[in-house]
Length: 214
Image 1: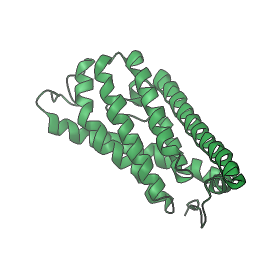
Image 2: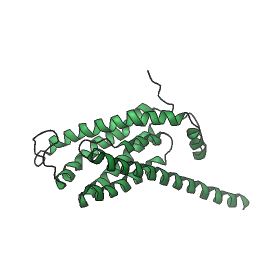
Image 3: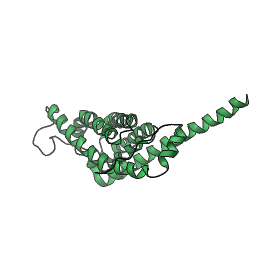
Image 4: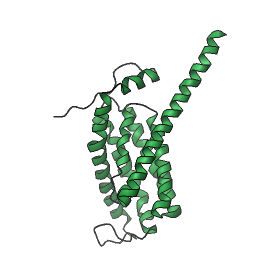
């Protein structure tokens, strides 16, 4: 009986830590995205984008809680962007599918955390494949009628717009993940955070190692 009574508080405390960690990651992602939206405008959500907050997807190399945390943070940020960008209900496409892309990318990162350089390709691929599928609808809704940097009309040129979005979104995401995200992971890997997270989760075995330069 005493064994069961000690297990319950321990499980409750562990659940509370997970919820707190998810909430903290969500808050950080949402806050960084809002800052990017305010200062970078469409570069944080448009056809050519560098959403710098995506760099913290590197946290999925350290904890599984980053997967729901990042997805929740992305949903909150995209909800706020509906007001800031004036996308209206079309912005819900970004709330749903943009958050899905972030969740899938973070999941891939967590699953492949033993190989950080490969793992960080998850957000790149997820965003490059998913975001361009709905972005033309959003762009037309706010007054973009041609593919950026061209005179090709978006209307009736969905395949061309998708290819443009795939390349533009993929390149932007890759720059953020490998120029900002990978150095962030390297810096965190030199702290006590990875060990603390591993012990908290009861994990055994080697943690992901920072990728060395050269």
